[in-house]
Image (cartoon, rainbow, N blue to C red; front, top):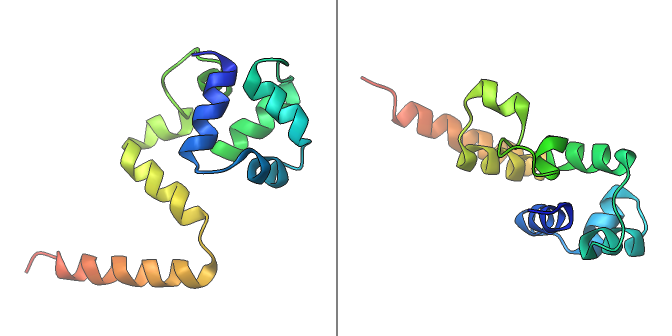
Amino acid sequence: MCINEMLIKLREDATLSKKELTEKLNIKYTTYANYEAGIREPNSDFLIKISKFYDVSIDYILGLTNIKSYSNQNLNIKEEELTMIKKYKKLDNHSKLIINSIIDLELQRNKPH
């Protein structure tokens, strides 16, 4: 997969529009659109910024590995768990309190007697 295809995939997986992403990253829309279109190659500063934003390795963005994040492989996190973590990180504090309460209740319910 080419860099531009990977950028599209990562953005779509995060359910972000180009406009939303460029606003979050504080970069010009046209510059980013050119990266996705394959007209321009992203520089190293952008690759660092985008890899931190999506929590993936630059090697993954460049298509050099299928491992999304080297930090995750040591934790043995499954893909669906990583997706949940990414969703959780987007929540406000109130929503996180609700989710934490539900998790605590479910842990109690599933506790061996």
